[in-house]
Amino acid sequence: MLTDLIIRNFATIDRLQVSFGPGFNVLTGETGAGKSIVLDAVGLLLGDRARPDLIRTGEEEATVEALFDITGRSDLREAVAEAGFEAEDELLVRRIVSRAGKNRIFINGSMAKLGQLQPIVSRLTAIYGQHEHQRLQRTETHLALLDQFAGVQGELEDYRRLYRELADLAARLGSLLQDEKERTQRLDLLSFQSREIQAARLVIGEDDELAAERRLLQNAEALAAATAGGFDRLYGDEGAVCETLEKVASALEEMTGIDARLGPLAETVRSSLYSLEDVAGELRGYSGRLAFDPQRLDQVEERLAQIAAVKRKYASTIAEILVRKAGIDKEIEELTNLDSSRDDLQRRIAETRERLLQSGSVLSTRRREGAGALRDAVEKELKGLALEKATFEMRLFELSEPGPAGLERGEFYLAPNPGEDSKPLAWIASGGELSRVMLALRRVAPEAEGIPTLIFDEVDAGISGVAATAVGEKLRGVALSAQVLCVTHLPQVAAFGDRHYRVEKKEDGGRTFTQVQLLTEEERVAEMARLLGGARVTDRTLEHAREIIAFSKAG
Image (cartoon, rainbow, N blue to C red):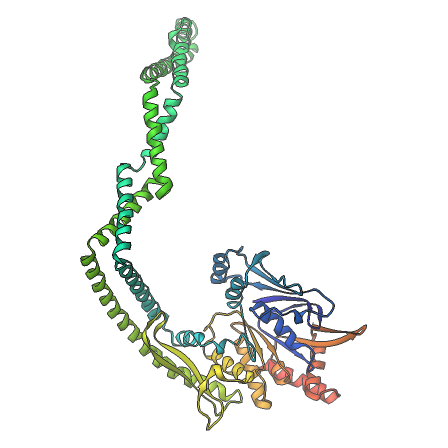
């Protein structure tokens, strides 16, 4: 979720830092106070164009920072890591807009590109309203929403697996059917590579054994000196260790008749003598087998150099090289036996395509069933959102060829008022209607997109009274599974917030400043009274404000 938003020198904002909490966060304020500026700042993080006119007058740079808590969201951490950034439980995103045109983006302290920023932040937050980043205006999200609602993830994954398999077979066939000249050149190259690897006569583990033998050959003289010298000092030389121990053991053994306590000591010395005699024998045998063979060392060096040359060209280990050769030989066989390979691939393509169409048909049936249930569920929700007569539907359009997501594309259609033709939701101009449709969708499919932070703007446009209360209730329901930020001017909506922020504009020294303040309970009552009564706040409006807040808490 979004925990902190820091804005500097952005429009009328000098410096603003606001912390948001989980659940339902409400922002209110006078018209023109700067609520839209806060949304514009978030939009900049979502990829809006960085315009110099956004920079506060008299300043050279504007900065927007957002800190997200992604604890427990392994999918988001993986996305950050795959993009090449440090993945932690917190994600810090910063965008700097400069009058000089040197705009910069940072993700967890590292420089980033706009193309890296957008895919990450779009999975963290979404704005629903009259905004460039209104997700419902991107039709590619519609089918995913339906699939989540209908619970067809299993069928969809089966279809996608077959689609990937078919695409792989088609690519192999396309490669096989390349023109004759390219095929001949490819065969020549592959044949050369296969012969080169074959000529190397590689055996797994051979390089390690040769490296060990090279170490022995290079150090044969030193090894011989150490082992032969050890034998001499232990056994061969006059007065060697073993000879001395023999004398000590014999002397002690003679004295055991005088003092039996010397017996164990004599045995220990005698045992040590036998052990050292064995060691001396081993050293003599080892030394006798050693021979410094310059010719063999040259052979080993030459063989290791040959193996290293093949490694540089094909892979870092012998095992990987042999796997590579198997792949090369398989491709040679396919290219050499073009007709049989082509026929085999075409047969497999036909079989896989048939299975894909069968899988797609099952998926399409489930989607059509789900589309009807989704229509009924959304229209039921819309009735409580001041769209009583609206009709909603998910239209499925058959594709001429199977696509990566199925045999059809899907698009939401809406007729807000009776007598109107249904139009694609992407054509709907009203930000309030779009926000309410999204709210309805989030109510019927809470986990549809998996976006942790949802920002609603204009969701209360054109409504009041009971409908406004229903909107507030539904937003609080959505906030049970996601963090919700809502810009509103209606007290009936604001009353349901877990946290209430006031956006206000002030003047100081001839300059305009926008501030966002988290309200205490009493400050919240005063702000609610302002929403109810306008500039004139009375004891009666204050009491009414308390009643609305108490009602919303009671549910």
